Image (cartoon, rainbow, N blue to C red; front, side, top):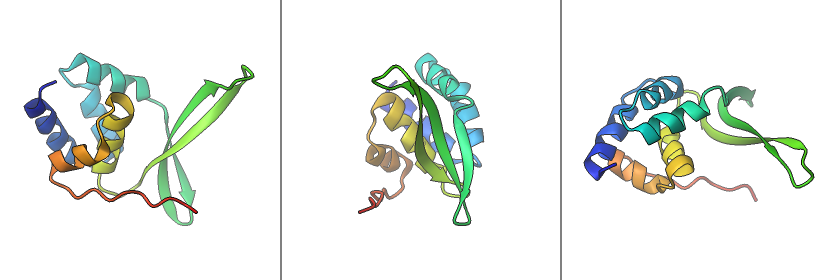
Length: 117
């Protein structure tokens, strides 16, 4: 995908009303790699109420070293947050585009997630 196409897609995604709509737009992409990557994520998100926040998680099952299925959970964003968080996560996880670079293309300021001590 050329830079101009990437920029256009990221900006269109940022116009959506949240993760479900952004994921649908990604699945409908003319770029086969992006559409397939988005399709592979379908059904892998869960919402959990934690401390009054609706947190959206990416949930997968993978085999551990002992050959047992283990659930892996990654916090993607909170309900109501700017969809750029999901967009940056998607391109980072699926295509190794740095989150900071996706934010830059969207014209938004990237803030590193604070890590728990």
